[in-house]
Length: 366
Image (cartoon, rainbow, N blue to C red):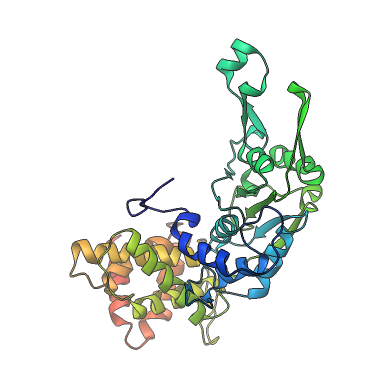
């Protein structure tokens, strides 16, 4: 659809990585399920990254356990749907988008779960002007992204499944078990073509979620998306994503500020786990999730401040501005947790004085 994606703020995965997907398709000699663009082996290679025989370098999309991705892809090659579950910021949406792009070449068949969504978001709706003029007909039917995926043999995605009301969630039960979507108003059924499957994401920590029924859970194979296992792994994730987003946001090309990323990720991991990295001190945790995705956002915000209101180099006071806002979501409880961390941990660390002073000044000014 787009010959030039340079002006698109966030190109879809199948556009942004079209050259990689094409190179993998050319090199892929493994068996492919019907209507899949790539084999399961090639899809995992696309996500994990690494060189191909022709010299093409595949950029890593996911840092973590290879086996976890192999289980996810193998699930989609069966008649079971895939549920990616975990705390916010564990790359559930990122992985689901790239899986859909690699399997179907189309990541747009997406349903965004919200508290106000109705069954038509998962099944179908109606063009009411045509419905009134012509009565129920296929021309008046408005298919959902899930119905479109069934008709075309593609992957559908449901983001934040647990935000959908329980009765809306259960609209998926018959669809996933029978692979058929009844349309009683037209006395017809839409039967899924080979290649159809569904990826849902859900988190188990945010407020306002609706538990999945046991009947619906049985229709999914669940893969738990873990937080990065080590400090070094999380720093690498943040660094790579910051560099990529910096290009999209047209920030001047500078080396990723590894020192500041290291300090930020250390703070997030310690507050998230309730203890310092060396395990010597116990800490209180704030109400915020302090995910890897939030760390990426904090660094990008700091870089924007440095570029537009500083000398272009990310410094402690640029980092502190976004860092405080990411941690202090509750102005009473979180503020106390953050102040205690500043005094008992940050203030005592050698070479962290600049960050302590900047954060302390912001807290006193607020």
